[in-house]
Image (cartoon, rainbow, N blue to C red; front, top):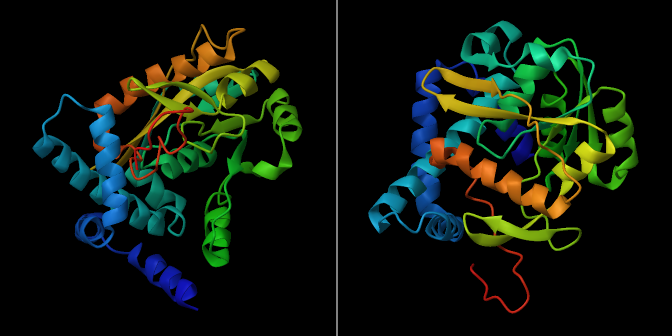
Length: 288
């Protein structure tokens, strides 16, 4: 019952002017920073590992900004998943190599975990008459799970695959030129993961970007979403011309290196609330 009431409230918030909603998100983010010390510690440890050159004060500022962006992005789903297409288009700018996505070529869209990742998906599926797929991670709350699934299927021709569906249907769709919106930059545990550097620290990383690109004979196109004062900017970057190779481990290390470049342009908007280094190499001390 609480979840249903909460989602009704969130939907109502979508009708607030964006500056009001962002101000509410800033307050909520500041509150979360205080009332969830365990997650604050995760963010602080991630930032200490990845940005050792920063002072404690600078990392504290980044941590506060991270919580604010997290809360604002969550509240922004109120209009992203419930307001009209015209309202979304007024707040989301899609730019870059967008036209190239219409080429009849299998394509994996590399969409790292920036706070606006759902905005990138919505912008593409709403704006382009193409077929898209992505891999959906179920939510623990059934009401929230249904809400997220419905939100991600609002526009266009889309299919959501569950992880238990396996690789074959995803690759089949990819070979049929259904664009795969892939988020491979998280720690999903030791199963099928390999350890490659991320900001100089070995991180368990699934080699799925290399694997799907190779199996689907597909190009890799980064799609990066940035939160702005007026909404979001979604940029489609040029396809990587040297990816994949025959070495999945080298490819995955390359992915992390290039991801770092994107993160460095807006470090507070990356998903540092995730325990990126939870799975450790044998004999390596725990970080969290």
